[in-house]
Image 1 (spheres, rainbow, N blue to C red):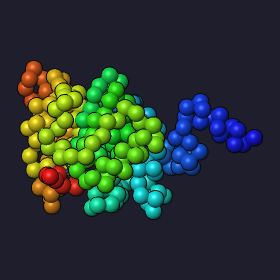
Image 2 (image 1 turned 60 degrees about the vertical axis):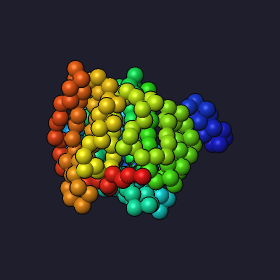
Image 3 (image 1 turned 135 degrees about the vertical axis):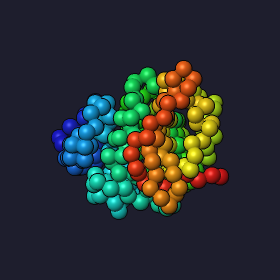
Image 4 (image 1 turned 180 degrees about the vertical axis):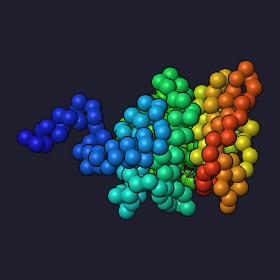
Length: 229
Ligand code: SAH
């Protein structure tokens, strides 16, 4: 009988499943304590953070740390960002249903999944081939059909799908790649950590208005370096 009920729930569509529910309370606590309490108010962002099973985006051995307040290693010298940073970067680009987003630095796939809960389509590029392959499998397994991913150097953006309403760069660049600015739509927003790899970097928000770029410095952060092929 129990099995029949679980299958029925899955058929009804909420299929991040019994497995995700194991961490449901931890995820709710993460959102309330780390994200709402620190001032994130964008409701679609909060809903997405409540939905995405973050523990499925970290290596198995870190599963029980998945909802804690720090970044975690994902292999190949890379990290999944602290949950608050993901929420903050999502909120500042103001995602809504009809928008198209580009992410540079797929990594674990978590930030792409959070965006994909809200926007129409997420395009995401990863420079480490193994991470690109693993995240693509994850998107498929979890049913994120609106994420289009590829292996490559995100410096050049993805001109075939431009312009983008949202561009999120999750690796620290010494300068903002001009192709990304060019591929930003009118009224589009681009968020990127800028600074030397070994130092603290600054999170910068660019908004394109009337073809001009407005720049806002948001906060100090620490990200893995932006690499080139
Ligand atoms: N958004 C990721 C964060 C991963 S860390 C997540 O949610 O897990 C940043 C990622 O950017 C790393 O996986 C790194 O390999 C990748 N990266 C660095 N330089 C890149 C580039 N030029 N193009 C694409 N990806 C890049």
